[in-house]
Image 1 (cartoon, one colour):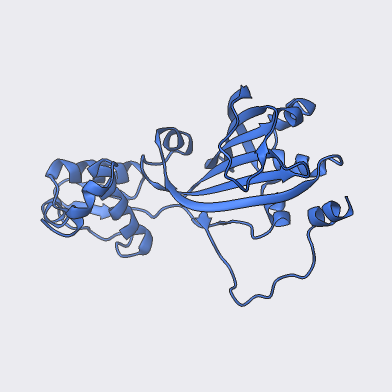
Image 2 (cartoon, rainbow, N blue to C red):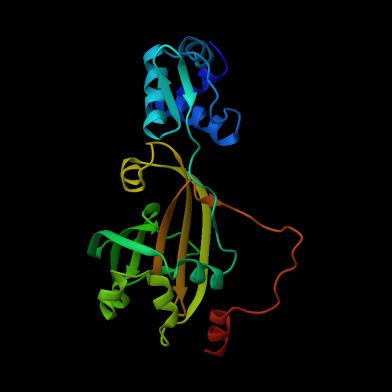
Length: 260
């Protein structure tokens, strides 16, 4: 048994999806270049320490994605590369967050008008009197790139129900003169696509996702907005100039809060 096969039991993701993920990474990284003939099924079977049917299933996934082409009697060739990736850089301050999402195209896939309160960590404020859950998919052109579960204060949702069900909620909340945001807590983690995320983003089950949680707390220490963004791994990057000096200017939200 090789070293790679020892890792399989650490994941609940089916073997063929794990193998397909490794093979996809080889194409993305350029180790397998477009036009290259990849190893034979027998060689891959030995390398990955799995059954032949598992290798065939993995190849079929990548064939459906347009990355591999199995040619009768000739072998399997790299036929394409993943679409342009890493165009989305998570914002580094609140103004950038607002700017980055204000023009997003969203499609609401589920609304629960009287939802239970979201889980809140100790520093994320206290629950509002009620919440509405808005589950949406966000698009770049025709391609889905993020799935969002947003728990929005029901009081705010009822003020502009139509807008909140058609446009990103955050820019509108910031425009409300009587809403003062004291804290905007952002947490970024790495996750995996569960069945719902995989279906909505059209990715493989268990594929990595970039997960961003954003919680807005108002001047009454109430969490009025709690959203979990699950980004398609092919669009996400985290880019920073580690030598860039912090901008001395305060954000518009900070200025409004300070004036309030």
